[in-house]
Image (cartoon, rainbow, N blue to C red; front, side, top):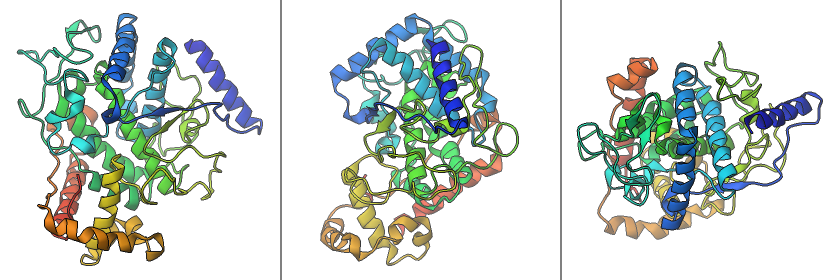
Amino acid sequence: MRILSSVVLAAAVASAVLGQGPQKCSSLHTRRSAHSLSTDEWRKIGRVLAQMHDSGELDRFAGAHQALFESVHGSTTFFPFHRKFVQEFEDVGRRIDGTFFVPYWDSTRDYRDPARSPILRNTTLGGNGQGPDGCLQDGIQGGWTMGFPGDHCLRRQFDDGSAIEPWVPAEVISSYIQSDDAIAQFREHIEYGIHGAVHLGLGGDAATRFAPNDFFFFMHHANIDRLWWLWQNTHRMMDYNGPGTNGEASLDDVIPHTDNMDFGDARAGSVMVLGFNRMCFAYDSAPAPPAQYPGANSDDHRMIHDARLPAPVFSGSSDTAGLGLEIMRIRRALAGSAALKDDFPGVAALGAARGIDADVDADACTCQERRAKRLVYPAPMSEMWIRMHGFDRARVDGVHREACALIDRLNNSTYVSPY
C-alpha cells in the first residue's frame, strides 16, 4: 500500500509540473476534538491501534521518528514533516477501519491542571505509569509491550510526580496566531512552547525520540497542525521561510523520510494546503479547506470567516464558547493597555461593525461578578529536552520569558480568562 501511496503522490507532483495543478481531494474526513469523543469512539480507536501494534506499524512510526529526529526539529521542516507523518499514520488506520481519524488534543483546555484532563482517564489515553519503570496500566494502550527500540512496557511518567506542571494557555497561542508575521517565528513559539510542554508533561516514552509509541503523539501533533492551519488562514497560506533541512527553507524541499517510511518525492509545498494532494482532512474548529488552490504569492487565500466559528479572529482554543468570551474580554482589556494591541492585532482590528462592542458591554457584568481566573505560567523546557533536540538554550528561554511577560500583561489588565 505504501508503494501505491507513493505512486499517487508522484502523479500529483507530475500533474503540477505539467500545469494541471495540485490534485483536489474528492472527499474529506474531519478530525474532531478528543474532548468530544464518546466512550464507544475511544474503544474503536483502541481496536485500530491494537491492530497497528500487532502488525508492527507503531514500531515503524516510532523508528522512523527517531531516525529522522534531527532533520525534523528545530527548523521550519517541523510543520510539513509532522503534517505528512500524522497523515500517513491516519491513512494506515483508515485502511483498517474506514471511519478512523486522529482526534486532536487541544491541550490548552487542560493547561492549568493537565493530570486531571479527561483525555488521561482509564477509558481514554490512561493516566500516569506505575512502578519504578512507569509502566502504563490503564487506557487504550494500558499494559502494552512496545517493540521499539527494544521490548519494553509503554512508559508514562508525569513531570511532577502524580501531577503535571502547567502547559501553555490558549491566550498565548492566540497571540502567536495573530501577531507572528512569519512562519519561522510561529514555529519557534510553538515548538519551544506548547509542543515541548506536552511531551515533557507526560514523560516516559512521550519524552523520547520514539514518542510515537504513545498515541498521544499523533493527537498532540494533530493539534499542532490545527494551530498551524489557523495561522496559515490568518496570514499567508503558502508562507515558508526560515531554516530548512538544507539551508533556507523552500517549498521545493523534499520532506525527510526513511526507507521504511517512504514519502517518495513529496515536497514541503505538497502539504501546505488542506484538501489537496492527499491532505484530505479538515478540523472541526478551524476553517474548511479552500475551494481553489492558492497561488504562491496570492493573498486571496487569507481567512474568510467560517460561519461555524464565533468570530473572525482565531484562538489557540477549540472551545468555541470560550473563544467568543476570550475575544470580547481581550477587546475590553485593549482599552486600558496599549501594549496588548501589539499582542492581539487581530482583536484590535475588530470594529463596531462586527458587533463586538455590544457583546463586550453585555459581558461586562459577568466579568465583574465572577472570581478572576489569573493565567498561570507554563513550565519551562528541561535541560534534557533542549540538549536532545540541539536547541539554542537562550532562544528557548527567550520564548518562555516572552510567554510569561504576555501572561503578566493580561493578568495586570482587566482581562478575565474564560478557560
